[in-house]
Length: 112
Image (cartoon, rainbow, N blue to C red; front, side, top):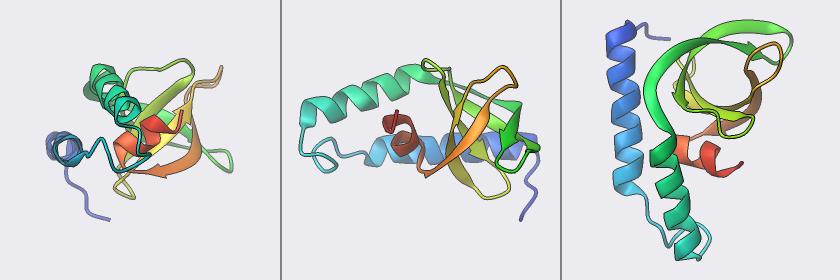
């Protein structure tokens, strides 16, 4: 694991998301262009400045990760710095809980 520092981590997150958006092909995933365009539009609208938050992980462990979207209903997308992957979390009375849906940011967002 490489420790980048907060400013570099935020720049890294923004770069990864920008690359995903730039490379997003609305026709490839489901063959339903309108649905894919809507997912991309909703994803871009939900993006926030990456914000460090405490996240509950499987096994009762907590750690800090960066929220990258607003809460969409009970769901929010995070970037996990220790594995350089995006993750879907569900909001709970204990805070956000990682539900082990990992991958690219748009894919995690679209799985809701």
